[in-house]
Length: 578
Ligand code: ADP
Ligand code: MG
Image (cartoon, rainbow, N blue to C red; front, top):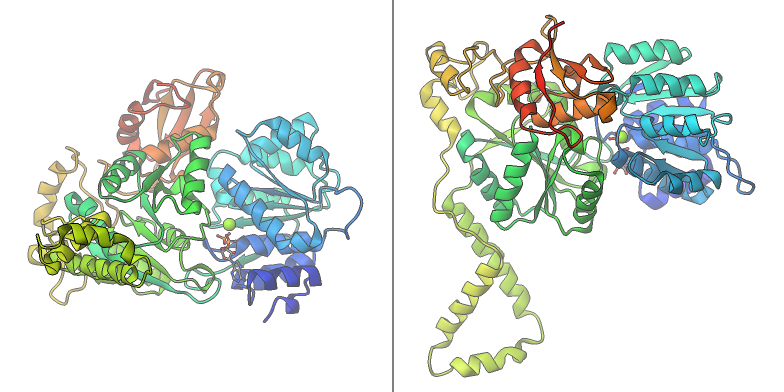
């Protein structure tokens, strides 16, 4: 099937051909005809499956022929500023031959600039819900002509506390509009919104194992290492892999900052990306990554959600994500559009079961490899230095350096001089040799009985009973036994609400401090290993806020929040009692 089979107008087909899109992805194949037919839709598909074009092309199909003032016909809501920019760039790109006018609208950017752009007339507005509401209240976002509203990353927007804004926005747009939701997951709250605001919606779900744009070219590997050796192991693995650009996912802000420092110490140009940074510095970081100045982006999931970065060659999971979906979303950032990509996961011995879960769900193999040895690394570095020298040998300005050779002539023989020069070249490449071997934790666990004889991870009660007691003490003094499957850095074990009532936290900051639900979700998700969907319900009052988190995470979250600021301020955090 080709794009022209989908019934798209010629200008769009020309644009897609220029972009090198050969055929529609599964979600595009399914969604585009339905949207062109005017249906409402709920689409579920993993990151990297081409959702943007799936809604952008049908929007662009509606844009009138050139001429006249642009009327706003489509509103796309996205959770973050970065996505607003990315999605509006994508729509602009797809609609270039139509002269489509697209603007991103988000908080943090001077409103005057946005007002100016809106007043000049735009076809498509891509906005974060909060800023869209601001404009709607001011009457500066014309909604009367809206034909289609898209909620991109709908689950994430709800997790960030935008539910009210979204309801409000949907109510303010014409009733006969078309409504489209794209979401990685479809929790009940999404169905709630769909019931209230979508007309007879169709549901499309693209499975996790299904194909991505172009061929799937992601090499998936995992290394089993002890926690204390992780940073060194990562350094060595990356030295071997020599990525063009990589993103490394960590669970918490603190971990992000520490790892960034370590990797910088190892000669990588690494930068942090997390919710604790100002928008301005986040923009700068993204700019440097796209420009190739930064090689490693160390980030939390929340901060990097949905980002599509062309240059990425490697995605690294510094821990095994406990939800397989989150693994799929992370690695969806490489191997896009037929480019080759590598996904690397560092796992502790006890996390091997999570890897097996992921393999089962994705129906793809993750090959377990050995951390490169000191000898491997030396061999690789020599290889790289030989390559560098070969290149230098083929340059035509070698004679320019003859004076140096002449100066040393007679004092040393040429071989010795060559070796000294090689030494310098080798050092200049930033090659570090760490002499310490990094033990392979999967071997160790084998002896300890973590693995069965056949080499497969033990299933079921994966933690041998006789080790259970000892484990409590290295888990920060928690007396809770670890539950199967999930293993986290904090004292908390197990995830989700597990059926019980959520625990509640009192946070001594509220509306008067400028707190919005999203700030609280952001702060908690960044400081702990909780995901947005585990946080809530949230109530923000004038002077304080109350936030639900899984009962067994309450203490851990309190500790984490005490060490950080919310909206730049220290706030009281304690368990909430009526
Ligand atoms: P999602 O929103 O599902 O995460 P995106 O819309 O960001 O995915 O698309 C992921 C990448 O795939 C982008 O780089 C995009 O340019 C590319 N892409 C999308 N559709 C196609 C296609 N039909 N053929 C080739 N590449 C595509
Ligand atoms: Mg997307």
